[in-house]
Image (cartoon, rainbow, N blue to C red; front, side):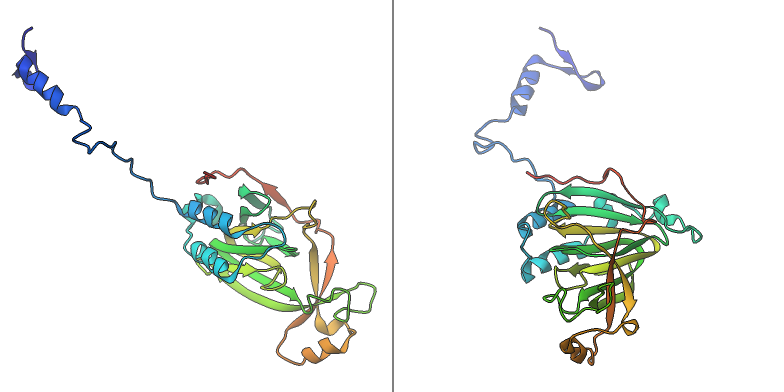
Length: 283
């Protein structure tokens, strides 16, 4: 057998070739008898959030403990638009149409189970999600992009539905306490609402096109009596009420209003699109 011609035409003797091949082969002894480990890929922010949600949400009838709420809040506070495949350079967030009324709201589902769901809401400028509730749910909302106004209420007496904290008229208005009435611009802290606290009934109105990452535990379910109910708020001064305990409490700093249950507004337009950002793994 003759010599092999290598790079740049340099002749390589057969013996040198053989030694070179043998030297290139890894041996068990040289590797300590173990195969080299494959480097673990760093875990993305969305996957960390997903795994935390799986540990925190235990299903209907449960509320995360304070330490668990803090855990999810810290993760969400660090979330960026890029973690779910979004960017402020996208055409949606650069569009300004002040004249458009009741624009369509888009939502996309990252993940959903019987214990929790991960959803992104896209609100064009001037879009409004009417005042609505979250029965038996704990909800984390993280404004990823844009600006919006949030107005939220809790029942003034959550344990007394239909008792003294109601109006005597035929509309059956129920007394609620204002929790939040303010503007928010991303980046900002994550908001958390609970079954009976934190502003369980809220309304979103976009000031600039915005994206909101919502974690709902558990998610809405008609079959499990967690359907969405809509309300309209009425100034407290417009109606009298029954019950003396609430009257005495009203003398403090509480900001009260009446809430009236309504049908889903006919001009509310919502559509669903497929989620196209980073995926989560259940493994």
